[in-house]
Length: 254
Image (cartoon, rainbow, N blue to C red; front, side):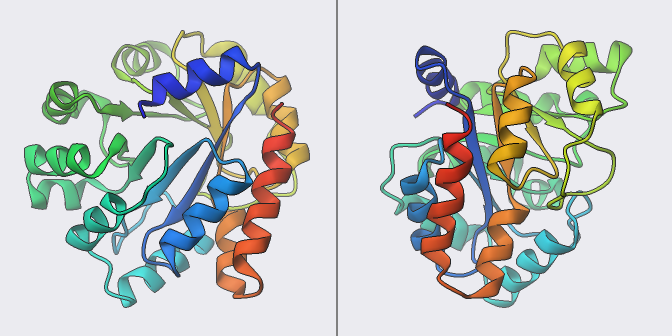
């Protein structure tokens, strides 16, 4: 399923999107993903682990290290996603080194063949994304860009022109991680970033209450990662708690 189709479906139902992030290879990924989707996740963002995750905070860094220690690599990653039998859009989040090493065209082809419909590369500057974007367009895959609280002017305009699928609005400066509050800058950013491309807010959202606040501020969806990974790391009733948290957050987006 294409990301655009999912957002059209959600808009028709007047719902916000729950985009759930987990790192592939950290635990039983297939079981984890099925639990998240059963709980209400609309889009699943599966991290392809890289040893220097500069945009990620301690929780996701630890998840990435567990996945690497368990032997996850690009070949296993694509094979695993190919076997996931779920009718939701899948997005790969990784760093440019892995894409460059595999070869841009090969990486995008592998995404298409395995059922991935979107790519997020936090360390790829938009002005240097042309070659990858070309292969994505050729294969019907969205290249998703991040917008930070301090992204403004011509750079913001450039991202709005290039980004497809959805825009990843970073709610605060810094790295990923669950927070007790949602940054006040989020509402200002939503008011400032005007586009027909769906806008999803991430970095710090960990509860239904926070998700509801972001949705009411005008976001088309929320991205939740660290809160789910905390559950995976605990090893306690993982599938039940993942499903319950996904359900709580999704309910707040209706």
